[in-house]
Length: 270
Image (tube, rainbow, N blue to C red; front, top):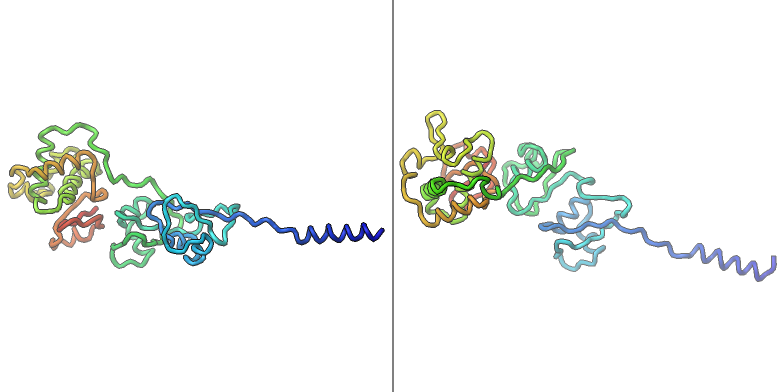
């Protein structure tokens, strides 16, 4: 073979050998509202430092809609947090009961899976989920308003109950008391009208003390009337609670129920 062709062949072979190999595309994750670098790193089983280095992040700030490259994962792997590890990141307003409803498990199972001694959780906390759990339709926090237009008597009764139960509480707590009544109307095991819920008597005991002591007959305050209308419009700061009680209550039964929120001096629970 002539020297020229041999040299040309060597150059071609070397060129092929040292040709740069295109980098494999990395898997990506689109940031959702409420997510943090820590929570994302936990879900993918990577470190925060590697996530920051891969994406050139100098601080810990990320924003919803931001697309992050996931170190160690290729796009062809189609990796998502849910397929790697059954975990859940607690969002503002979440409770163990709401999360359990979302994933179709009991809140006791969630406590056991995370070695929790109580039901206290906080936004950003990463919870382990029992293996095989799948997200269900999220529980409805706002009822979206009454399906039937309430009568003036219903509005007045609800406002009077709010006045009797929470006249000294923050305005949000007043709405919460009204929401509990309406949540009961919509929930199984309770009467189906506002009046029947307010005046419900089980085994000779009224569900709401103002009905028993007569305070339900006092005129409603203007704030309570406004709060009643907001609750009837769908507002629910309690995240779907069906019970409420004062924080000084000594009832073991009430305190045994999963707490959804505390507003002022009132505990809201399921």
